[in-house]
Amino acid sequence: MNFHYLPDFKSMSQKGFELVKKEIDQKPDLLFCVASGGSPSGLYAEMAKEKSVNPDFCEKLRVVKLDEWGGLEKGSTFTSEFDVQSKFVQPMGIDPGWYWTIDPFTQDPEGDCQRMEQLIQREGPVDICILGIGVNGHIALNEPGEILKSGFHVCQLAESTLNNGMIKSLKQPPTFGMTMGVGEILQSRKILLFISGSGKKEAFERLKKPEISTQFPASLLWLHANVEVIVDSSVV
Image (cartoon, rainbow, N blue to C red; front, side):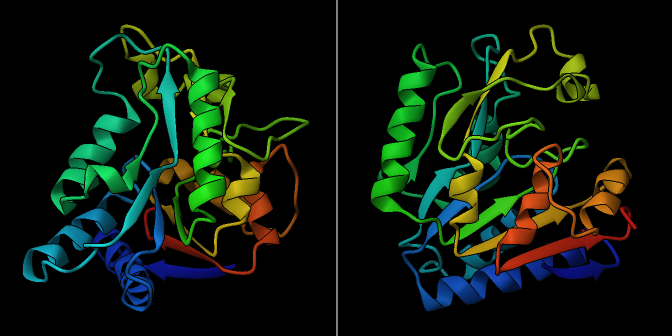
């Protein structure tokens, strides 16, 4: 793991952009795994800014969404889809034919996960995987447990995830998740893990120790040869 300590969120986002742009310049049609949430949102803003002055930037990019909540009320804006669409897909003008996702309101979660798994096998491996970290150490929605699944799958959400302040405030909170598995994440050629906010301090302190456990899924990133951990000062 390469740890990058930046003074603020903007600097963290710019560092992430430098790393991503270098890869895209070398391989314009790479497979980019996009994550929702606040930590990587600054990266997407930097990418959109570049797109506005360089229309060819990301013109050939292939994009797959990392994970999704399930069981939300129809039309909820808490979905990963709403977040990713508003912060990345639409500002970047990603061609719908080059963006693969799960509908948060799907009637067939297992079937859609199988479809995504087949897609990854066909289009993958992922070239750049964007990640955040949960307060309990989850990556994507791979929650702590005795066993972690390798492929795209429907997952049970941990109590620590459901007790998150934003989720608790929902009228109808999610009841399950759909996520890329740890095996697929670890097959990515490059991983960028963004960590921001004082609430992630405990998870970050644990991550710094090269001790691997399925009870702290982010620790499995120590097994990968090309992980950039980008941290802002609010965490340290």
